[in-house]
Image 1 (cartoon, helix red, strand yellow):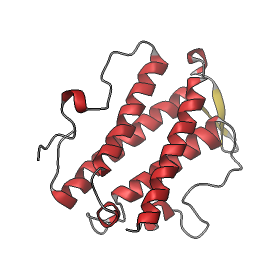
Image 2 (image 1 turned 45 degrees about the vertical axis):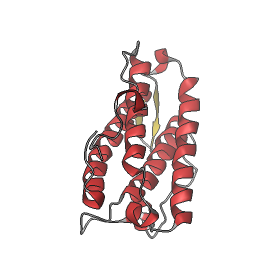
Image 3 (image 1 turned 60 degrees about the vertical axis):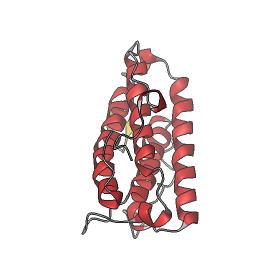
Length: 180
């Protein structure tokens, strides 16, 4: 097996030269989302849920659940102003339910990937209708703070980039597969 995730034309990621700040941010975000999904390809529920770097509770399935929660928080709750929506994969008793609830059952895997993909589709739909000239617009963040749309988008790229690195290590511990 090649250590590359996708060769040349098989790679779904786009490495073009986007025009504009919004397109650049969207491109990086899209590529990192695809990368995280690629790191999960071909694994069964037990492998996806494996906490392969003890004592960490992090797993590939946990990362998918975590990123669904992150997408939901930043795009729905913050950027769209729906702060009253409950957080995904978080309870009053368990702030880390995204990772702690990532168990190796097909129903949990199916729900996690469906939730993640739905959150991405919702975020992309919102972003498609967002005017690049508004990237500096401030939105409420908590009770006494604000954040710019630009900062949220950069944070999302950073969040995926950091977790793509985690996914590299988790996947390598599961089956030895490395690569891009």
